[in-house]
Image (tube, rainbow, N blue to C red; front, side, top):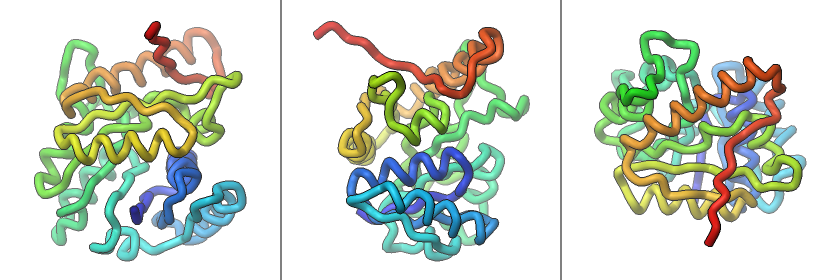
Length: 216
């Protein structure tokens, strides 16, 4: 699978590393070209068997790319989706945004529309998958916390796309869980909001995430 990650910040680097560890070729882009080159070099140095390559936006959105991860603020995801040339059309689009900084798109545990659902409405020609949003970027980059693999909860209305993302997650050394329909992104985004609340109230660092502990 040919993957791209748009956004070379902490979350973009973390997801790019996981995809490369799953054996994929990953195109990493950012509006700051130098940042994308630095991030790609950093991640590729420790991401075999795959590779992370710097790319411009047009290459990252090329028709040959099977899956695009938007490691951007929610408002920027919407702006890209609504661009005149509809660059996300026909793609599997993985949304990692929580939009915690946006009161306009605030997360409500009472069941307001999620950022992922807004993105899907803005990009109806795309298949939107929610994933990677419930762990802080440093934990996702490392892949574990105190020896426990990071759990990634995945939601989408398209079962094939959802299962493809879960399979990539599992191959990267993490644990992927099927969270059902895209509307369940509301719960995942609320979980992310809870993690930020706990971090602030308990004075934690960003070394935190949620783990599911089933008794089989």
